[in-house]
Length: 402
Length: 167
Image 1: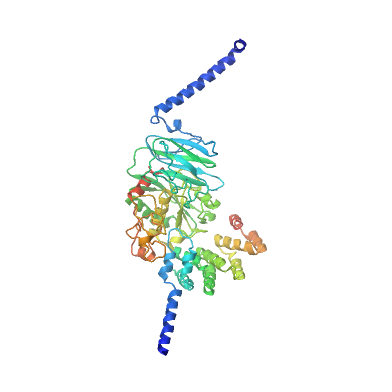
Image 2 (image 1 turned 135 degrees about the horizontal axis):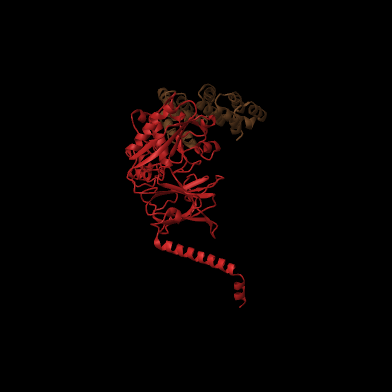
């Protein structure tokens, strides 16, 4: 009786409550019906836990967005995203702006299988920078999970869920479309320093283009951009170094950025990538690879064949390819069709290092072998230009390819 | 008996030479790789005269630079007088990438035994035309001679070099 009187006293309040209740009810009905309909007919925006505007990468069928995360009772951050039925690949990235190591706790596919768990088959435990594990993969400030990292994995349609340790954001680059039989990848070269100019690296870029073309991937190589600021002539090989970060962050988002630096200030590498894979489609510290020009010179002349192979090799890392055989001959990539050169049978000089010469016929010819041919082999015309079918698969399905 | 003794002495010396001076190919193998870190243990196993081979590689202008760079780096493990003289020469007279590596190898190999020698070289390199060489020398100077480092900061015209030197 008392309530009746109150409702009669405030009819407008009653109407407002009624409308809010109805709206909430219809909203929940919508969610249930969405679940029943499946994901096939819904757009990514409708379905995903999107917390930022979606960005379409120019010229690609790849979208990038940040994923909303919620804190779970276990203290971990949790989120989800949806892969539509025409999903080709995705790169799930996690960031920590103070550059402390960061990774995911789990990544469950639509069937509930945690592909980062060592007990799942197959799994990427220890084989993705974004997985927990101690294989020495760099996770400082950034790590990720790429699918497919081999043909054994596919970005199954449906809802994927993840749990992650404290981070600043998680983003996804999701490629959709028809199954690729070939691929085109845009390359943006940059050159720093004053010793060499754009014309000096054109032969190396041709070598790199030829290597990829022979393996079913077309490279669209943009004009080389010269960066004249002297502080970028020689930079650290560490991508979280502030100067290297400022340089690499200048890279384009629609392709792979190759920075031909005059020299490293703290490394003796021929080149190095920002990650395996690095970042794709986002301008940041991990969006490119470094190649040292000085290291590839004999006197004032660049060794274009070796420089081209190095650029192609580092680009392979940036897109998710590992060394087929590591230096000690005991660690290999996860691909089942790449040759393995075993220390136990091929280290003829017993020095603990597998040379390309010792591994001839056992992966020494592969672009992703850990070391180039030695000087005398290169002089004799030996090259590292081959990629296996599975390596090509990873590249063709890349979120940064079309 | 006397001849047998002489033959034994000769044989012993030759064996000694073989162990002490590694084959150039052996050394070169340890300098290979797209990504490279100094493998201290493997180099030390090569023997004392490895510095001679590394100096030969480091000074060979017909070789590709990455082998020469790494040879200089590895020389820090063999702190002989030959090594010091070679590194000083290259730090002062060679092109910038070799100059910086020459200085850094001298610093790493001789700082504990001959700090004044390293400091004298660093002082000269503070005026090197290449920024990274100046930065490397200045960082060392900061740790051994703060007033001189401050004078460097006042005289250095590139602000980013001053900033890097203080890192």
